[in-house]
Length: 287
Image (cartoon, rainbow, N blue to C red; front, side, top):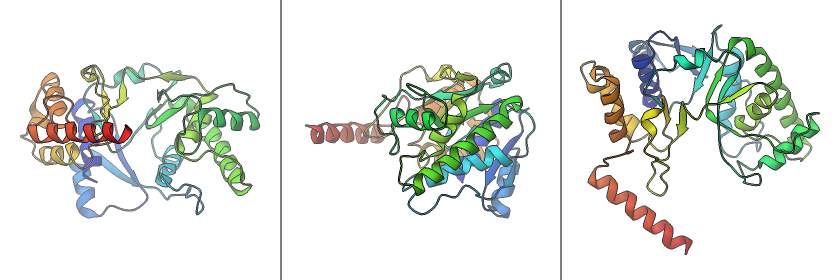
């Protein structure tokens, strides 16, 4: 929950004109509602209607809740969906100038790479079975989708087609769309979509794997999947203190400070040693 508060607070910091909503299947309680309100966000409780059958999704079953958010969230304008471990570090108004296409983050997986039990090649075969022949399909990360209001109904309808297909193929023992990324991939494949790698990136800062490029300051959104229990926990303390760096630093200084907290650069000695040791162990195991 702390990560969600930080994510929405960061959106408030750099995009105060945007409505911010924490979408959940269960009421978070009075204290968390108050904390979300303190960062200008409201809580919207939406039932988890896309709960998969037992055995359907051994991992990331909760990711399918995104389909309910797309379908039910009470916003009539541009809909930007981000995961709780996404930090906003800049202006997002550029998205509003691209109303003719959905914004999404393409992930550079190979055609035969296993992506939660389904490769892009296998996904293309399912597209074919649904009447849309493809030699290859794009795969987009589930941490970020920007959907203009003019395209939202089409996304909902195409996602519903993919969901029905997934349930049917699962029951028949065939390969199927296993996560919201595959289902949204089908939805987006038939609609105008913009690769938003200039806005957002998935940045790994784990001990064993780092994907930091040094160009993160140019982005507006950082997806930090290894930082929920580290950087986001540390930043939460700053969020609840209105006199902290989180609320007072100018944008360039904010980006530099957030980057240090997240381990993008100038890692603390204790963290640097852990990262080096973990990478060494990983290399030894691979040998």
